[in-house]
Length: 284
Image 1 (spheres, rainbow, N blue to C red):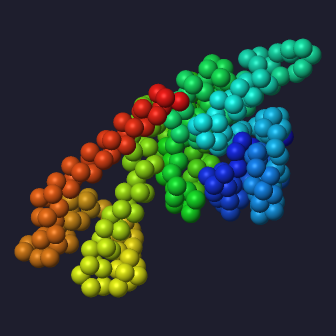
Image 2 (image 1 turned 45 degrees about the horizontal axis):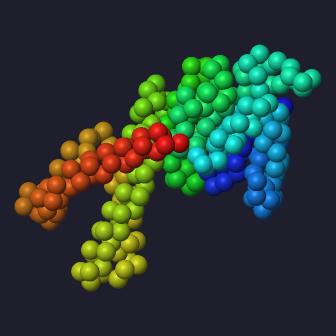
């Protein structure tokens, strides 16, 4: 038996695999991945020296824990295939030995696919953990949130946290509904940062700085501010006051932000993303 399998070998799966191997949490010989695209399988096998297959049920048979790393549009087909090979008590049907529900841990990163949806397919006693990761996991700076179904043990949740902390940070939630907020904050959040950096760089370019230099300085400013905020014992308001001297340049900029209702714009954007996450969850 291998320790971990992936159904779906896309970018997020590859990021996790690379992180797990780099942190030495798993050996290559303990991992297996299935993917429908031959070139994808060849790339993963060649680069990471792991086992690959086109057969999802081979991963189910060989791995104790499975990461369901497929798109939401593909999840039903994958769940139906897995369901055909598992049984609540490991029962035999038509002479074929089936895998018991409790013998595997399923970790789903399919966006919008709820625990109840997964339980309907895999069984009410199945060990299931749902995870919302984000794109920076692909560069080892991810932020993920997990929530477990009733069949998932404390050890199952700890295992999922261990996986996603290999590519950044991860936290456990008790309320699945909060994953919509997580999606709006950390899932969609990188795009908000890209937009803000672009806006700063574009403004500096319009005032005379070369475009490449403006983007470089904006990126370094965000990086430095993030690091200072992370290590400081001061809260955001105190840090802002440290930079914004009365009557100074920063205060002038902050007054323009306030006049344009910047905080409300951000809040409304996050709320819109959270609502869209709920809608997508209902539609899948």
